[in-house]
Length: 258
Image 1 (cartoon, one colour):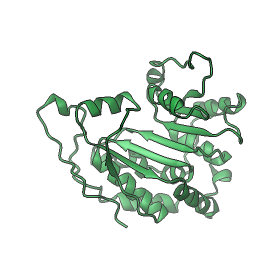
Image 2 (tube, helix red, strand yellow; image 1 turned 45 degrees about the vertical axis):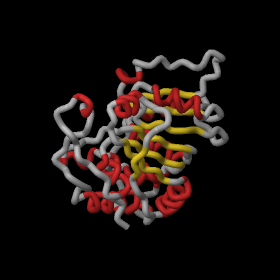
Image 3 (cartoon, rainbow, N blue to C red; image 1 turned 90 degrees about the vertical axis):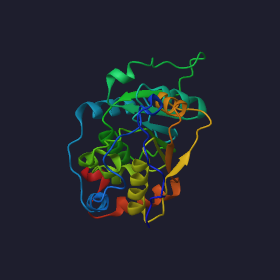
């Protein structure tokens, strides 16, 4: 059930074309990844919810943005929100929720709708580990969940800061919907795929891809500089199956213990 794909992770040096490539002393999937993922799957993570993020989530509920009969797409770690705006054009019949913890990044893109005034997206300042758990607790399942170019935390000692080794990872997968993660670091993609494979008992593989159109400034920069881009896609069927197992597990209790 090995999820790595033998991708070429060599990183040329000495040319501005390669600025922005991830530099790391780590040469492959972290040797402790499996241990951490299994530990997170077997134990309950009880860190308190982030208060301001709870307030931001409650505001979405109060305004009726999140409701049972309204499909939505989640753009996690949306940065300035430009990717959220692009997704809003691609999915005009759905609400697009872009979430980022940085007010500075979010403030760089005006939270405006199209000229017709039909705004179908919202930008939310919130901690993702709290926001994901709240969505899961209340049964709000995105139709699609995008994680574009997350912070790679390339130092081997920072493994636990990567989403696939973070304690919130089981809730991330259990949240449901079709999930896609994109990165320009092949090792991160391999690790993410490996972690999902361990959680779901499905074979998930990282793939190299070339976007027909870019979804964020990061992706545009990487494509212009000729960087290799990687994607990990997890189908809605797989996340839904995991969600059912997760919600029934004695060790978690998503609604009672989040």
